[in-house]
Image 1 (tube, rainbow, N blue to C red):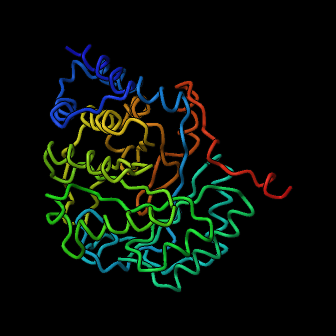
Image 2 (image 1 turned 90 degrees about the vertical axis):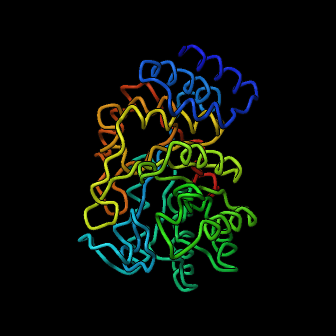
Length: 335
């Protein structure tokens, strides 16, 4: 039966769009068919990205102090997790993070700040840092600052921000079970806002928050409808002190099926294995890259990631190469 996943992959490469029923079959498929499912996903991935892997790195420029009530987040107002809390880092610290990203051969540097959304002063602060980062290191810059007010997306675009991340996190139906201080549409509106000014939209999900299989399918199709260029797939790393503490719904095989699902539904998009990959995929992490074509290196927001050297070793062992195509050339800019 698993052979059908390879046949379906070939159809997708030719332009076929999988249905919701087919997507649900993928996520509910037998473990016995897992390798054939991943083989199908890899055929799609290879058609668009070859053996390249995109590297991303997060700089948590502002931690905690958030008024939102997101049930998964250690930085939320209802979390009692003992995390570092600080206001936005100074410009030099943000730029120093970009230097480290360049040393790790990272193509996209992600400037992240906690909170509902940035003040105009915070946007100006990020803008100043981005201008220097683009000049000094030529990195692709992704900003993740929350819900944007009018005029803020334009400022970020003018400064050279390439991508803006604002995750839908879960399905529309499940959203109110995860957070009540903002709506699903609040998130959609910010994604649409950055698209209108010409910033590449990045929006993803967190899997493992007590959602149904149908919810996961809804997430994949919602991001298809949004036409998100980059889709981070996070797997819940339940943190003590948050409402979802102790939640353990995931196993590595299911996580691989989720990644395959997102590849089949969004064949041409950057699918990134994001937060929680180390604790949920565990020893099967390398297999995830047969469906996904992007990972984070280094730490996440308030949790530690795998050592960057191990990530580079993993890519080498897989025979994959680091994609530099989206990394701008400082030399060319200065000629």
